[in-house]
Image 1 (cartoon, one colour):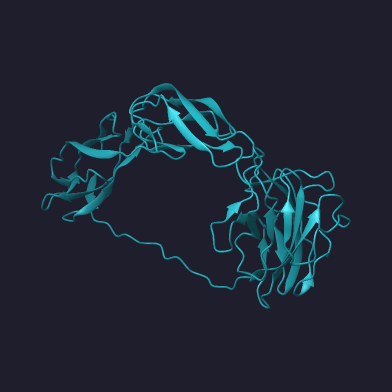
Image 2 (image 1 turned 90 degrees about the horizontal axis):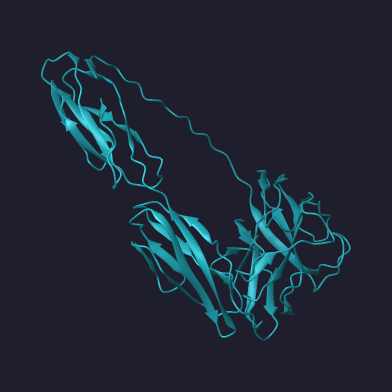
Length: 362
């Protein structure tokens, strides 16, 4: 550090203002996946529910979405979501076709992902073409809306064994400003009677002393009970469907996962790899400080083990001033001795919970 006289300037940021579009879900209509964008047959009238929906069969859902603002433009990339009620928790329709969620996107033989839509559902304002959406996406490419303009978007998906018999589900395009209508479907009665199959990843990495969480998921008819055994030190099964905790040591661990229901069970091995800890690195630093002034100094460190919490520790104090260490933070306070002008330094190191860094000079 060099103790001298300094004048500091702070940047001033300018803030702008402007309006935003108002996107509204105005109408919907259910379709069969039996034809092209403009020719597939309708399952029901506009804004009308469908019932007795079968699992594993493609269905298509079309929306009319409008930007009802008369002054502001904007872009929209619609994503399909579902819930058990319009006030419930909304979940994106899955883009992984593994049966882990009640609804998942599917491929259609009748259109290509991203095909433009024609005006099949009416809406507020002038028309702009939207997009058709199929697996591997649940989100349309972005479409630009002028003020007072509407579009159509259509999604192809299917129900899985997770969709409960006789239950109702509602759908929406996520993140809009308001919703005039919510599409609703009711599943056919009865369960699928499908045995569970674990579909969550079977290889995963952890870090020593960093919080860890892994959720077990399985396809198949609910209810499904989950379990885990052969857990390494520091981890535990939460009694529902997750492994949690903080790995206490490095190594490779084979954890037994099980999913079971009235229709069968599935046992798999999860391979958890926890690499050996890498010590943090303390970086040398320097600053020019005004004589007689208590000043903050910022310590710099790095660690290839992402997520570990580092603490900071003084090794040797400065000779011509005082340092105020802050163990929990990298910002310390230095005050030079009265009337001192010249060079001064202190040394420090950091700790990641497992190992110390080398010593650095500031």
